[in-house]
Image 1 (cartoon, rainbow, N blue to C red):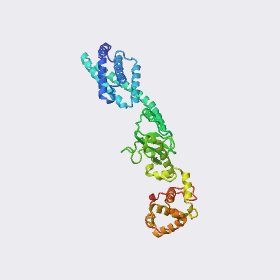
Image 2: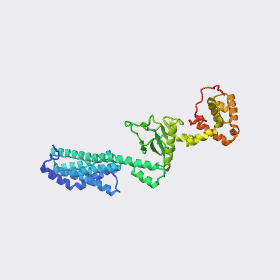
Image 3: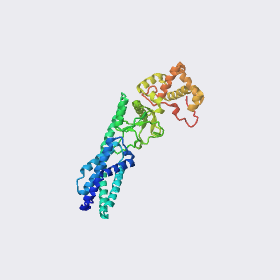
Image 4: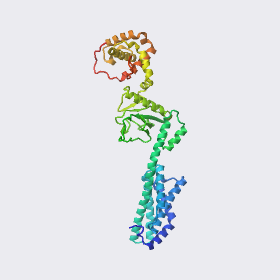
Length: 419
């Protein structure tokens, strides 16, 4: 049975008459309690918002009175109003819990005033029970309308927010830096707090599938997972606790990942460029992953050295041309020894570093002296030789991985090596 129709008609007119007389007073009390009990609604400086909140309270109470007076009355007007309130909550960025808390507080105040009215009119328990059931049903239907509006707006707005953030990311990665005003305007529309510094993370998503696990993005991270490679913009990554260790993105496991240098926001494109380059060097075997991630800040010399691969190969082959006629096994040993000698400066240190006998080092150095002559004593030539050897572009080869002598693990014991 409709609880509104359960109120005797003779009493309904008297009850609703008293309610209408105190409607404004009750509305003000509900509004005051909601604003005091829910900090998110405390906005006395926003006149439009205050009027909207008050109108919602008045409409809800007025409709409740009308439904008691005329059971079965169409409540579409107020349902629409509360759907709009729900949409407004979604736009404001508040949670649905906040809205539901406000509705519960309003319902509690209204029921308290109804209890006083029941005592004043000396209503019997059956009438009070019917009014209570009607009030609960009324609040439930209002909450449902607000929830429907909230959910509809979130579904629509989430897609729009994602599009705005994608446009913001494209703006930050554009060849010509955007003006600070344009960045701030679009960031505001995308609900993104503008950081002072950023870093770009890229990961290999070439094998992405529809069933792939969703990214669990930390707050403030902008993402474009449709690009190749996928790219994320990390706000203030060097802030304590902001981004430490391997990224907490579950979908990145087993995916080669690179993090670009931390730069001012206006230089985000540079961080993207270096992160992408580092990922390319991982694929070619020049750089190795540390726990699935390569950090550009740890490999700046290598990135600089490989900034122009064709030029690097051409220069390296020209510099190392004296090794062209040396057989491959011996050429590799001579190149290894020359790099170690250029970096350490004496045969004893080279022997220790390469775990070979000092006499073997001196023999190889005499061979290198015959091949390179005075170039081994010229600072400019020594610098060029070290660059070429670090690049690993040996004569006669189309490419090769960089030689990072300090990163090569030494053999477990001293070995007797050939010349």
